[in-house]
Length: 136
Image (cartoon, rainbow, N blue to C red; front, side, top):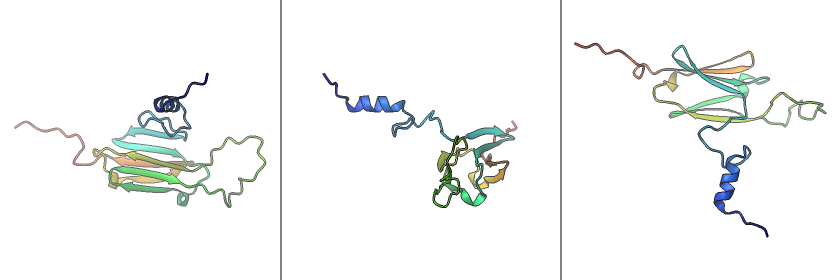
């Protein structure tokens, strides 16, 4: 006898499938190499950009959102039609978006490319930075 799956069963099953559209928002494992860390009172993003030029990547800020994207077009890509024995270098599109805390000044964000890494730094907002208040 075949058991039919209800909608909840499908969502639960797909919740653990990384290729599913029902991925959790929090704790979602990214399938692209990205490091995010705090250092020197700034938020740092490092995104693998091996083989990409600065003009291949678009960085946008919209309100409190930082968006980084690269649209890989296989048309005109000289490596696309190669007969690979092993293909380990990731050459694919990406489109990331992060909501940035208002404690950080997204308007002062800076980006650079170094050693195959796209580096984005966002400093703390001056009026939001922690400060000591003197007691009078």
